[in-house]
Image 1: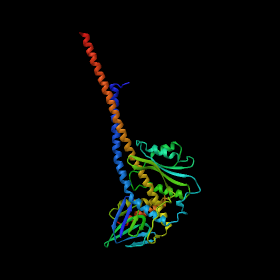
Image 2 (image 1 turned 45 degrees about the vertical axis):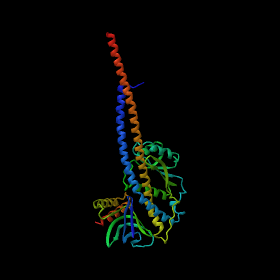
Image 3 (image 1 turned 90 degrees about the vertical axis):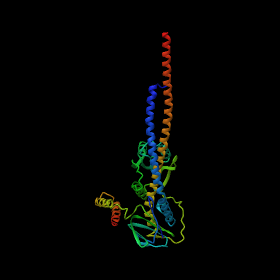
Image 4 (image 1 turned 60 degrees about the horizontal axis):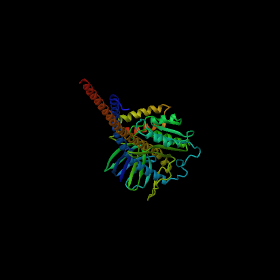
Length: 284
Length: 125
């Protein structure tokens, strides 16, 4: 049934106000995306240097016996750090992560650390064991202490042999339109590192084990920060795309309704004219 | 000698310098040109950069020193030059850390590090 004039008028109004909101959110997400991108790429030199240093130290280290390179044999418990969003309206960003990770987690054994309110609600509802949760994601502040706390925590847990391995789940940023849920192993450390060759003998003070021990919290902190910021970057990109689509859809719907409104209006005018001319005929 | 300091925000400093003086866990080290390749842990202390006989001081909050064949790198979480330090903030951080140290409930190790960092910054005043 075609909509009446009043009905279509009301719906047009409501769609117009929704469109205004989604347009505004798209603009906000665009500017946040830019900021997130800036910060993410700012970290690259630090990451590169640290990776290089890690490779150099590891090359000189016997990593077969080191606990940081081997899965804990005493337990099969795993820890997952999952990054979700705190705010909604970002398309399939969160749902993709849920779908991706739920097959991998063993509900009975594994523990989770969840970042972002949406994820906390979801995993709590489903009855997963969450050992710590961060409702608010950090603002784009590179000096954020949050990652340091997580890094310290997972390192001590791993040293105490509570977990077999510790993973991080986040949305990998490929470009502003594509991002995919990914999983990386934080601990044990990868053994497939790049070997670094030195021409001269390398002095390591006080000794390589000590240096390596100092490096680990540094390295973990940086890794977590990197993936967290990458996830936040994907979130903004996802929100921007979602809001852009919503604005486009609103526009399309508005046009359709406008057509319906004009049709109804024209029908009414035609009807009125025929009524008037009909009654004029009757008067003759 | 090429000196490169990186912190989380990217490249903090890249310069051609004559020498640097840095405190490591093994004691104070002066790195001159053509030093042997070396990796060492830096402690929370003052970093001295010498260029054309003038010294510049930085407050270094720990990190790793990596002397490669042709360049010296310092990888750190936080570094500030004398001008950049917010002394008011450092003073407040010092007071906060001191209160935390007296409280047996708090994480003593973390408070100690915070206190060290604050004192290090204040020493440049």
